[in-house]
Length: 480
Image 1 (cartoon, helix red, strand yellow):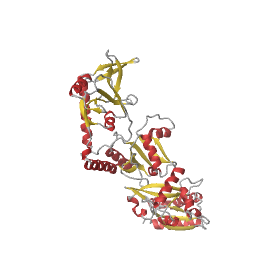
Image 2 (tube, rainbow, N blue to C red):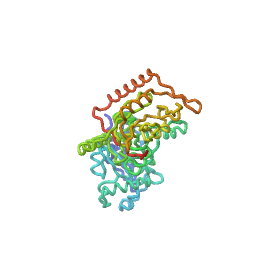
Image 3 (cartoon, rainbow, N blue to C red):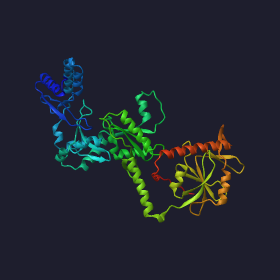
Image 4 (cartoon, rainbow, N blue to C red):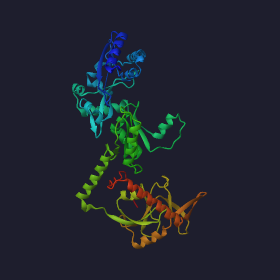
């Protein structure tokens, strides 16, 4: 009959008492976060205010597999015990009697709610959907860089503080002693390879804290999240890689929530241990509202706001205008768009620039940074002699002009400029100049067919109910 774990613990206890006769040796249950609770052996050397607690399940499994190895396993256990005792941090118990001694050593940890429900009832925490923020006191010394103890409800009551104060003090302490860091994935890969890999910038950014342990807590530092939003250029998705780090990806339309969720869940299922698991959900940071939440919650919130706006103020329906949209490698087409600045920015994909190259009462609205961003060349602009003096990069609009702003093109203007920009052009660099050639109709039709197929494929992957797009948050004023 195989030796039970309880009998194995008794043998280990006797061996530990023989090895360290002055130590206090007990068998006890250890309650830990992330479902790691176990019954183990606790050894507190004489004169020490901290103990070593060892989980001996793995050693027991070795004996069950081969009972003849009991002596060798006990020797391995005692060797590990000696090493662990040498590494016990010197904890000043006075540190836990006064909150003034504690608050400068607070740090945060984010954990999943579901596996830790019972434990969370005993500790102060802040819940954000399916994850929770808990608080730890750093007791590290020069030899032990990641030693900490969990703040309990009893400790918080003894300190005489509120959960709100505990959270705010933990944020301040985290920023001061273990501040969050943000690095591009390609930069981290280069560091890991010793500089051997030279990769272009990745869409993924890695957020953690100095030291890396419990680094996903970075998402709970508002100052850091604002800095990340500025660096990424606005809203971003948060992929909970583990309790030690998160991945940030800019919310610019290139990635959709469902595909990111699939990525997170696949990695969690194959690469992340139960002890490091954080969430199967994709989160989102709204840089304008400064809100960290599930991506699904963000989508619902934006949709509800849009419905509420339309319901509460139907009389404020957007004013629209009919203009000509000219896209690279496509024939021009009339479109109806809003007259607001953000509508124009969305149509050209960035801050706008307006030029007035024609005698007609029209303007060209284009992307101000089209060439800097490397957008595809679209149409050439020519002088009265037919010589090219500029080339528009990216999509642009031909708009009518009113006394105060932009407006619809007249039918004659629509026809004239559709004819003028009808044929897409391809460009060949000739020395310092550029030559524009008309794109063959067959090539144009092929491009339009490919674009239609991509749109159809994307539409088939998305839900039937689409979330209204969020308005751009940064604007750049422009005047004629």
